[in-house]
Length: 339
Image 1 (cartoon, rainbow, N blue to C red):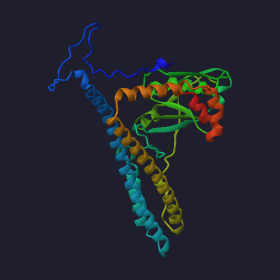
Image 2: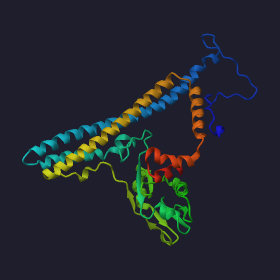
Image 3: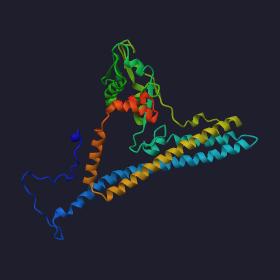
Image 4: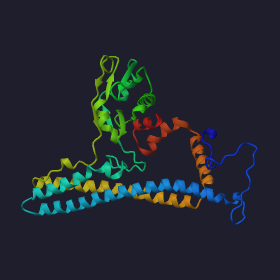
């Protein structure tokens, strides 16, 4: 397993030599052999990694600025709602304008952050925010037990081949998830399980609208009908912030909306903190690479990766211990084991 990952070859492309042919020792203007200038090549390699980290830092700053703008809007709205509660008559139109302005900016989340914030306001440094959804009838309990059935899933353009998954017959829960992930990978769909044991699908946010329109299934008449593929109704995971539900018609509405605004502020401030931590870690990595040796860093990474991969205990121990240690549901653990 130690050979799974090999140290990086930092030899620049185009400089490889034929076997047995020695390269002449070119002299720099100072008269020193080129070999003594190896740190320059390492610096170039380090710059390459630093450049990638720099792009991530820029993306994080962009997301931070966007969330900061939302927080300021909510702080203003919070003040207006608080004042509204002290007034004899509620300025419903004025308060609604504030709610609508926030909702409009909230709707720009994906475009304004480059996909680095998902609907649950989790920060994703890689910019790969995904839309999660569930499908009725897709529960681990029904997909593991019962008779064997082959499900044909249609997730691509019209005429695209079906993606098939065989379920039932006493399959393990982790195996069911593995099969769905293998089958749906070409469509960019990932699968895990939620806390209730339902299959939780996810796809890139940009691809979600099209997938929701064309997702269909054909079964064998056991769990799903045979014959013509049937459209599946995909239920998207609700957004964490839903200002469309905020009402300001009277004092009671304003009081409830104020509570929701306070909760939304807490959520966004947590997101701000997560982004700030990611930015600090990225800056630290850039600084470390700019003063470090790329080959040493790469070899250290490989050694650490293999050490983690080969640690004793195996997946069985992980399955038994994780719920007790971190309090997650059994289905979350099964999802991890299916990776």
